[in-house]
Image 1 (spheres, rainbow, N blue to C red):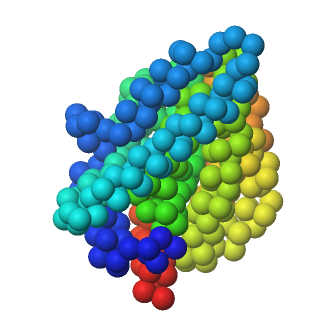
Image 2: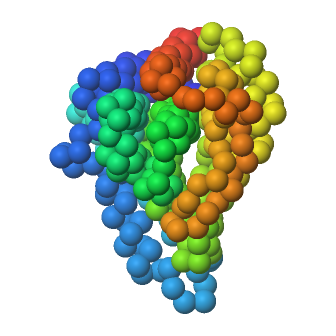
Length: 314
C-alpha cells in the first residue's frame, strides 16, 4: 500500500478530510473541477485524433498518454511540494474530495425518488436523465426506481470504492489517474460507430481492467456486512450475465439484498438494448428500497475506509 512511502499523517488527512468534505458539501458544481478539466482534455483529443484510418491506434496512444500525463504530473507535484507539507496536504485533501462522489450520487438519487413519491413522473424522468445513459422519456415509476437502484450500485463501485482502492495503492496520483480512465470511459467508451475503434482501449482495456477488483470488492462488502446469503447467491448466479465484466457484480449484490429484479430492455441513444435480467422477483419497488440502497452505499463506504485505515496501521 501507498502508506509505505509516506507518513501516516500524509495518508490519513486527505482520506478523512476528503470524505468529510464529500459528506457535508458534495460535488461543487460552481467551483473549478479537475474532472471537468479531464473532460476538456478528452474532448480535445477526440476532435484531433478520432479520424482517419488509424482510429484504434490513436485511441490507444491518447488513452495511455492522458493517464500517464495525469499520474506523472501529480507525482511530480508531490515531489515539488515535499518541502511544503501543509500546502501538499491541502491540495491532496481537495483532490481526494473531488475524486469521490458518494454524497452527490445519493443526492441525485434522492432527487429522483422525491419526484416519484410526489407522482411527478415527467419531472422524475428528466431528473433521472442527468445520472443515467438510457433514454428516460418513456419510463414508468417502477422503471425509474430500477434505474436509480442500478445506478446507485454501479456508481458505488466506480465513484467511491474504486477511487478509495487506488488511493490506498498509489495515493492521489494513482487515484486521479483512475478518474481519468473512468472519465474517458464515460465520454468515448460507447460501442457506436464513432467510438467503436477510438474508445476501444479506454473502455474495453483500461476501464475494464481498472474496475475488475473494485467491482468485486464492492459486491463483497455489500453482502458481507451484514451477511446476505441471497446476495451471495445472486452474485454467483447473475454477475457474469451483465454485458459489462464488472457492473454485474454490485448490481447483482443489490438485487439479491433487496430480492428484486434489475436489467431487461432499455433504449440507449435511440437503440433498444436487451440486457439480461438480474434476479427473478419482478416485484414493485418502493421508496423504502431506494432509501435502503442509499444507506448501503454509506455503510460500504465507511467499511472500505475502515479497512484501509486498519491496513495502514497493520
